Image (cartoon, rainbow, N blue to C red):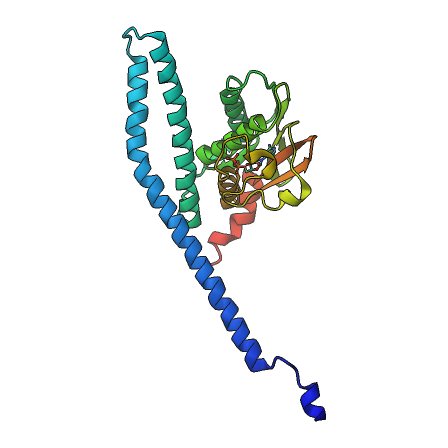
Amino acid sequence: GDRAARAPLIGPRELGEIARAFNDMAESLERQREAQFAFLGGVAHDLRNPLSALRLSVHVLDADNRPLESSVRRTMALVGRQVDRLDRMVGDLLDASQIEACKLDLRVEERDLRDLAQEAVDLYRPVSPEHPIELSLPETPVLVRCDATRIEQVLNNLLSNALKYSPAGGQVDVAVRAGGEGAEIAVRDRGLGIEPEDLAHLFEPFRRLKSTSGSIPGTGLGLAVAKRIVEAHGGRLFVESRPGAGSVFRIELPRSSSRDQADGPRGVSH
Ligand code: ADP
């Protein structure tokens, strides 16, 4: 009668079972995800060798002074560009699977962020002459302890996106700033921008936005990899954007001096 009517529909035992079922589901999803990334890593790894051979052959043929018919030369250039693109995609896949397996080794050294920003801008200015790239640097060094190759990879990814997702003539600004504890590199474009509901998903692997994925090629891995690289440095990668007005991606890294202080007691504590 009365007691039965007030008894909870789900008792502690049922709750326990439901919780266990959820945990099992989460674990099996996690295992599936790991297996997927491991598979992708294997595929990427196997693609590397034939791709490298192809790349080398194209460059050898190109470097040869043998007179080539102009149509052949044009085709060679096209093959070269596509091979480079494949190589970058395979590299992204490899990085993503290694990062997923927590196998990202950083070779850390002290570097001036101004140099890294300068190098990235020098690299990308010739890539797209129709996008002016403005670089603004502080007068004094901005030292961070980082894996320069990895931070360059992040910068290259942000710059290539800024160019890819903004119309010809759209200016791109790269700015280095030093704050009290952190250092920042910002890459700003005046391109398509990103819808507010997409902002949260931007850094998920394989995520490509509806607005851009139809026409512009990409893997949707670049930003996922970039975020993990920055976080492995103890930093943050984030974005602010307005649709139609453009986006700014900020890399925030701890500065050498403040980090050394923060890390100080660590070695002493045991
Ligand atoms: P990819 O560019 O290879 O697709 P990314 O991980 O670098 O992969 O980017 C994921 C998605 O985020 C892109 O497909 C695009 O939709 C969006 N995106 C990235 N950068 C920008 C940008 N600067 N402006 C607008 N959309 C961007």
